[in-house]
Length: 109
Image 1 (cartoon, rainbow, N blue to C red):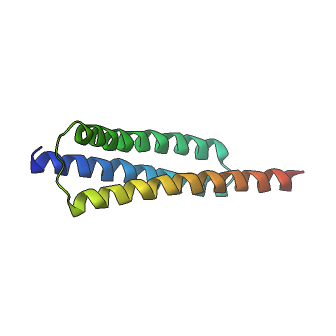
Image 2 (tube, rainbow, N blue to C red; image 1 turned 45 degrees about the vertical axis):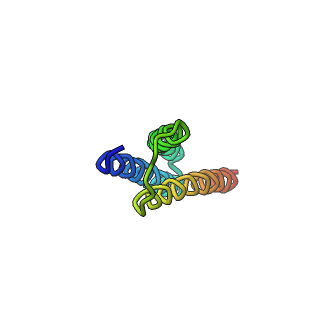
């Protein structure tokens, strides 16, 4: 794999994971305003971006398992950090949305 290909892979993960994280944050903000339909829509968009980042990572891992050497780089580590942060943000966003929904429903009673 060329260095340019490695950069493309790393930046692909960074791009999609970063997009996912931002969408999850926006979903929290919409839930805070009690717009749960919009929050759910943003979570779905975020999941789509996260799936794209995960697919890039999975393809890379499968390639390495098949003997295709991947050079270690700080950029790859950075891309994995972005993916991990997006996954964590997704989990926290869903918890926060559920909590907002619970409290808004409770207030309506």
